Amino acid sequence: MRKPELLVPASSLEVLKVAVVFGADAVYIGGEAFGLRAKAKNFTLEDMKEGIAFAHERGVKVYVTANILAHNEDLSGVEEYFRQLKDIRPDGLIIADPAVFMAAKEICPEIERHISTQANNTNYGTYRFWYDLGAKRVVSARELSLEEIREIRSRIPDDMEIETFVHGAMCISYSGRCLLSSYFTGRDANQGACTHPCRWKYYVMEEKRPGEYLPVYENERGTYIFNSKDLCMIEHIPDLVEAGIDSFKIEGRMKTALYVATVARTYRKAIDDYLKDPDVYEKNMDWYRSQIGSCTYRQFTTGFFYGKPDENTQIYDSNTYIKEYTFLGIAEDTDPAGRCHIYQKNKFSVGEEIEVMKPDGRNIRTKVRGIYDEEGNAMESAPHPQQSLWVDLGILTERFDILRREEAAPQL
Image 1 (spheres, rainbow, N blue to C red):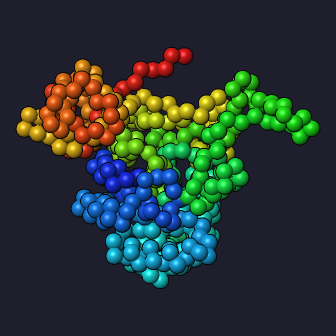
Image 2: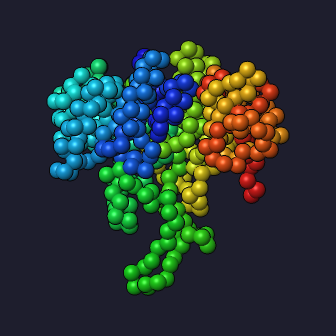
Image 3: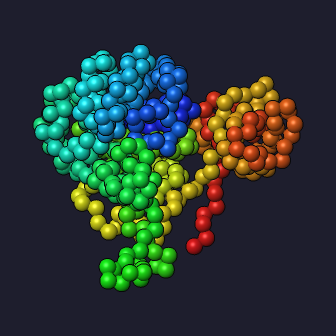
């Protein structure tokens, strides 16, 4: 049995550290160029150095995305970028373009090369092709079933790795090759600038009746005909392991630290429980469900793993996330009085009940007993984002504990 790697996204240095502390075996990040998340915060070279050092000190790997489909004018910049990464020494490069792949192989051959899902990896012949060129790992297309992945595993070298998305947003277009963003806004999804038009509201207009907008679904607000539910395989860890997948990949390189911590901690425990004792995994299923349900999400689906998706994998009446918790901040430090220091993410007030979310799986409910600014002045609330605060919670916190507030269920 292969012990799967838990691969978690990070949008910033802060989120990378949270991912590492909350259970990731590896983290994938993007630099300021040549990745497919132009709107993400992304990493400067200095942030990469610090993040890689932090991860390596804790036995965690870091992979860097360089998965754009390059044009002629990109290639010299890609080569210079790889020369810089050669000195920083990430554990792997995630690449889609053959020219970019060959540049990495020539300039920094000591860094593993992983083939991005953008390369449309749907068969064992493709895996073998990349292996023969020197790739260590291939990220399977989201359109593959578990049966197809099992066959790929049986037909590729044993030391070649399969990485597969197991949780997060699903793209409605084939492995991310969507033209809507480019068509509507001039922003190319394959250059990292997707505006996510799959989440917009649509009507249908018949060719001979211009100006008459017909609802696709019986709803006066229109419908979200391209809007997929989110992938979630927390209940199917045994099938993923049995299929021979080496790396369980979480989608979300633009997500918050709260989201990353919640997903990483939940999948970490589920994987470890299953490998220790399948009965323990089954017994703890309600806990996994409750924790993964506390993330922001758009309802859940198993994607293509058990066959082609049908109408039940789409959401027709909304493009909004379900949000059960609000992210308040990350414990940075404590003072002699037991107060924790945070940079506040959302407003909260003295007297509110909140939760302290710990990497070991505990969620400790407590009340906010006091809020103080940097000068020690008492405050009734924390209304300004990124404000530096000291918070008295009546309990001791540790660095990287996450503060969150449960939100009331929406009225239906």
